[in-house]
Amino acid sequence: MAEFYSILFDWIVEYAKHNYEKVYLPTVFIIDEINRGEISKIFGELFYSIDPGYRGEKGRVQTLYQNMIDDNDVFKEGFFVPENVYIIGTMNDIDRSVESMDFAIRRRFAFAEVKAEDSYKNMIAESNDFTDDEKKEIEQRMKALNKAILNSELRLGEAYQIGAAYFRKYLYYKENGMEQAFEMLWNYHLKGLLFEYLRGNHNARTQLQKLKQVYDKKAGMYEEADTDNG
Image 1 (tube, helix red, strand yellow):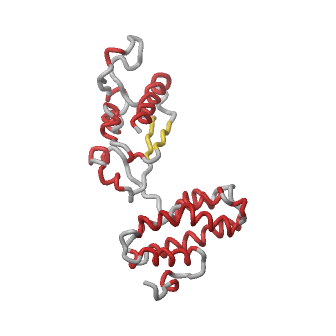
Image 2 (spheres, rainbow, N blue to C red):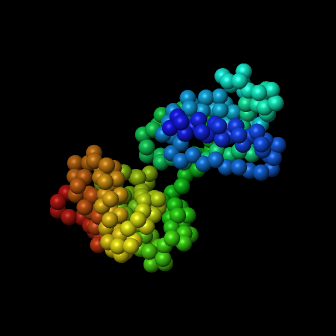
């Protein structure tokens, strides 16, 4: 991860050298799972420079390698992040590593929640990778499963709902036919994840079976999937 962020730093340096005067051209750098590393330490001097209030040449900082910079280098007088470079980080807010993010890094980013239903629209409904029948089937299974996850008996919540990124894995198996593909999606991706969510519950396996029934559309509401096994 530290190696990845060094690549980020190098990329911004190279970009700024050639484009720092073109502030009218927005450039976006997307970092998936940004919370996986110790961001404050990894960013180093860049941590200061990404603050919106210190972007551009007015926010120059002296780095540890300042004496190694050539005289004709745009960063000779200090490093800065161009105002037209936007950094977007993604994260899953149920990951434990989110809790370790300090307030300094939180102040430097605006936070926007992407709900499960939003991800369906962006990643499934508007995608050309799925047929209309597949989109409809995914929507039905996804909505039913996520509605069941909100059941108070599970002691989970909205943050544990399954996003469309998991349902896109259907594409790995679609050549096996729709029903078999959804069964493989459950067995290889959803089953293990949901069991980990439920692990602390005394009847986790029974609850997982109920969720499977909802996923298979054999029960509409979570309560309808209830059995005497719990």
